[in-house]
Image 1: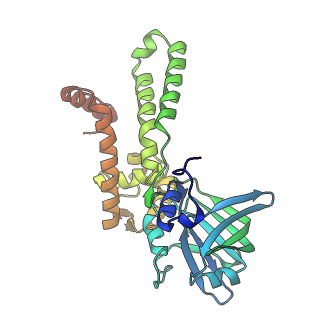
Image 2: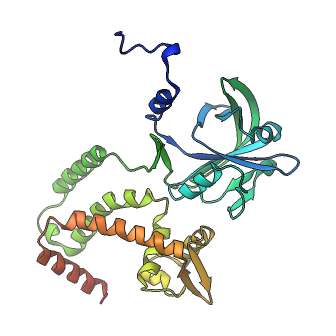
Image 3: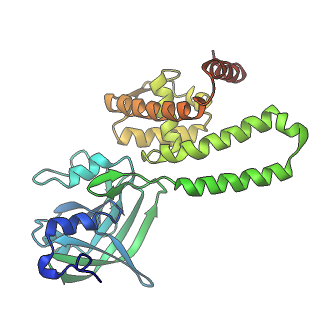
Length: 319
């Protein structure tokens, strides 16, 4: 090993060490607890890891200087709330000091009265199992007694900045190439001129690239579709939305409930309205959709793009 590759303990710069650790991309969690006196705490942390499957154990660490530690030490349970891509504001909120972090925050009480945050990617409710000293931090090990897997795309933290998850492009290329080869061998002749087949296939390939970009925002397809439809002004009546979004009423209502909790949507007299925050979010989703559309269509002349969109509008009955 050369001198440049060797770093002795005495020579380690804390800031450079922290920056090097930042190369390891992590999820973002908010760890919550409530003691017997009803004192609730919550801290943003990315020091979360699994320990064991049998028994189910996880760990995270907290700074010894944290004013919240005494609650985690006293409480019988704590929860690790893995944040979704839409919860950057919540992450920032729980990283602040000297504020009421639970004011305006959607949560319910879980086992041991632990606050469980709403609309996360996943939540692990834990019994406090063991606390171990680890340098300037306490390592808290929990035994998982319940968990909730919501399947939302997680918020990612890398090199001091928030990020999101999308499939690696090389994997997408490999999958698309293999799929194309299979279909070429399976279908011949007139099927490649069949409108239904071509539209279905084109839509699938279009979504293969677009949906991961949308999921990075933390919104499910149903929630994003509702925001886009309301943002475009094509419908606001609750009864019209299943038709315009092409979703069952139950899914529309579930999506609306989540958007209301996030202060993106309001309902009055059977009509939905976007809040200012909802309008800003819809604008961001429109930018994302337009960017992907331009990426796909800009390889064709503008005249052909216009004709293609006009044909789709006619087929869809959209004027």
